[in-house]
Length: 51
Image 1 (tube, one colour):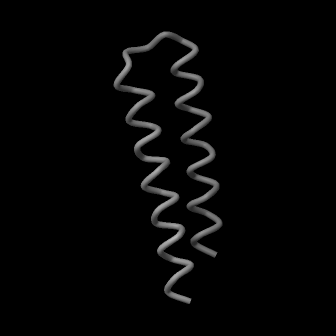
Image 2 (cartoon, one colour):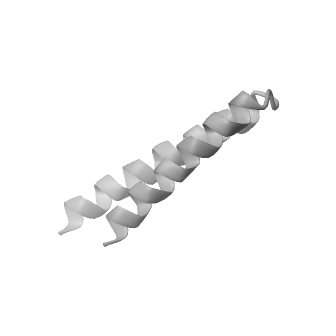
Protein backbone atom coordinates (compact mmCIF):
# COMPACT_ATOMS: atom_id res chain seq x y z
CA UNK A 1 0.00 0.00 0.00
CA UNK A 2 2.67 2.51 1.02
CA UNK A 3 4.82 1.62 -1.95
CA UNK A 4 2.00 2.53 -4.34
CA UNK A 5 1.50 5.87 -2.63
CA UNK A 6 5.21 6.63 -2.75
CA UNK A 7 5.38 5.75 -6.44
CA UNK A 8 2.45 8.08 -7.10
CA UNK A 9 4.21 10.81 -5.15
CA UNK A 10 7.33 10.25 -7.24
CA UNK A 11 5.27 10.69 -10.40
CA UNK A 12 3.84 13.96 -9.14
CA UNK A 13 7.30 15.19 -8.21
CA UNK A 14 8.67 14.36 -11.66
CA UNK A 15 5.75 16.24 -13.21
CA UNK A 16 6.47 19.21 -10.96
CA UNK A 17 10.13 19.13 -11.90
CA UNK A 18 9.23 19.16 -15.59
CA UNK A 19 6.79 22.03 -15.08
CA UNK A 20 9.35 24.12 -13.22
CA UNK A 21 11.96 23.31 -15.88
CA UNK A 22 9.59 24.57 -18.59
CA UNK A 23 9.02 27.81 -16.66
CA UNK A 24 12.78 28.55 -16.61
CA UNK A 25 12.95 28.67 -12.82
CA UNK A 26 16.35 28.50 -11.09
CA UNK A 27 18.07 25.19 -11.80
CA UNK A 28 18.06 24.02 -8.16
CA UNK A 29 14.26 23.79 -8.00
CA UNK A 30 13.74 21.03 -10.61
CA UNK A 31 16.88 19.25 -9.38
CA UNK A 32 15.49 19.19 -5.83
CA UNK A 33 12.16 17.82 -7.10
CA UNK A 34 13.99 15.06 -8.98
CA UNK A 35 16.06 14.25 -5.89
CA UNK A 36 12.90 13.95 -3.81
CA UNK A 37 11.33 11.71 -6.47
CA UNK A 38 14.36 9.41 -6.42
CA UNK A 39 14.21 9.20 -2.63
CA UNK A 40 10.51 8.40 -2.84
CA UNK A 41 11.14 5.59 -5.33
CA UNK A 42 13.93 4.25 -3.13
CA UNK A 43 11.60 4.27 -0.12
CA UNK A 44 8.93 2.46 -2.14
CA UNK A 45 11.45 -0.20 -3.12
CA UNK A 46 12.56 -0.63 0.47
CA UNK A 47 8.93 -1.03 1.56
CA UNK A 48 8.52 -3.86 -0.93
CA UNK A 49 11.55 -5.66 0.55
CA UNK A 50 10.07 -5.70 4.04
CA UNK A 51 7.05 -7.79 2.99
